[in-house]
Length: 370
View: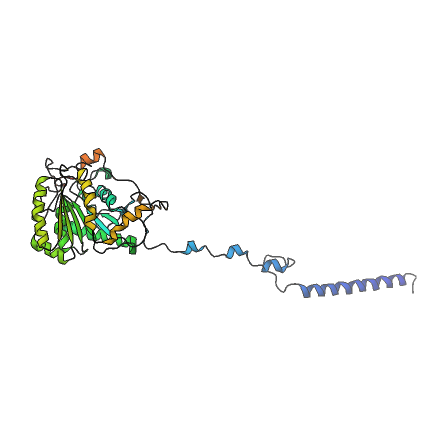
C-alpha cells in the first residue's frame, strides 16, 4: 500500500457521505413539492396566494337601486306652482295636464277649448280654480295650420264625435301614466265656445260618466244642442249639474230658457252672466268662473282638497320630471292675435267652419282677451 492510500480513502469516504446527504435532501424535496404546478407558474411559488379568493369587493352584488325596475306609473310632483306636463295621447296630439298636489287618488276635470285656441291657456285658467285638488286635463284637438310653428299653432275639434273620442283617449292615457293616483269616477267637463257647444252633444252618452259641467259661451242652446230628451239621458248616465256661463246678453237670454229644459230633465242648472266679458274666458268671465266654481263641484268632497293643500304648500321642494314645467301659460299678445278665428276670417280648407251646426258645431273665435 502506497503512502497516499490513507488520504485517498478518506476523500472517498467523504464523497460517499456527501452523495448520501444530497440524495436524502433530494428525496425530501420531492416529497414536499406540489404534484402539478399550474402551467406558466413556478412550482417554487407558495401555494397559498394561488388559492386566495378574490377580494370581497369584486364579489359584492350591485346595489339594490340598480336592480329595482322602474315604476310603472309616475307620481305627481310636489310643488307650490301649477305643474304642467305634456301627455302623449295615442292617435291624437299631446294633451296638457295640470298635476294635483299631494298623494292619493285625485279626481279629473277635463277642459276643452274653442276653435282657434290652445289647451295650455285653459289648463292655466282652470288649474288656478282647482288649486291642486285634482288633475286638469286639456285635450289638444287638431292643428288649424300644420305649417305654423308649434309656439304659434292654434287648434280646433273637427266635430263632436272626434272630440268625444279624443277625450276618451286622453282619460285612458292619464290613467296609464299615473295609475291608481287618478280617480276617474264622475269627472267634471268644462268647455269654451266650440268645446262647450260640442260638449253638450258629447255629455249624454260619453262613457266617462261626467257628473258636472261648466259650459262657457257655448252649449247654451243656440244650436239646439239641448233637448228634454238629451237632458234626461245625461241625468240617467250620472249627470247632476251644469253651469251655463255667458259674457254676452243674447247668450244669457237663451241660457235662461235652456236652464228650464235642463231642470225639467232632472238636472240642476245655473246661469251666470259676466256682463261686458263678451265672447271670452278671461277678464270678467274668469273672475265670474272663480266665484261660481265651488257651486260646480258642490257635493263632491274629492274637490275640497285644493284649499286644504294650498294651506300647507311648500312643505316639500318641487320634484320635476323631464317633461314637467312649472310656469303659467298665459298667451302673449302676439299669440292672442294669432288665435282669433272670428267672423271676419274667411275659413280655408285648413280652418274649421265657424257655423254652429248640430252635428258639426264650431265656436266663433277663441280667447280674445285674457
